[in-house]
Length: 133
Image (cartoon, rainbow, N blue to C red; front, top):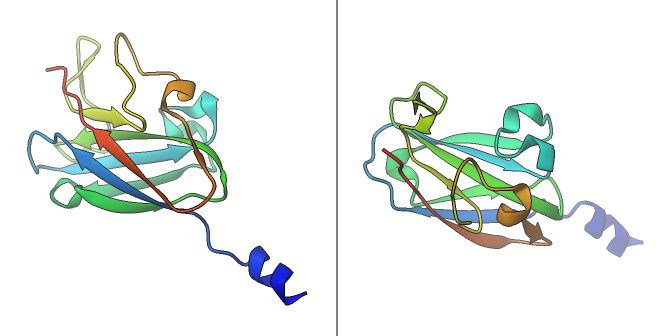
């Protein structure tokens, strides 16, 4: 019986995230971790998502806690002016962005499938930022 109690109270999986390629240390990174394909990359549509803001100067390495084991995707926006959203110019992002598994970006955001990864325990994701303008 004690073994079952220990398993039930196990801490949620920890994701160590490292971000590379920031063009400057201004503002913040808006980070979204979701298991909902329909809510990717905009976590505002997922009440169960994990969202946080990380100072750009501290974004080299930070930690996210997944709610439980499962399949997740991470989206990151370099919110350089700290207005809590991605700024656009003629439908192109003016600020940087990145995704777990670093999928190839053509037009629009990648699919959840191309950015998703399985979380069964503590793990690490490296995200390379991209800038269009």
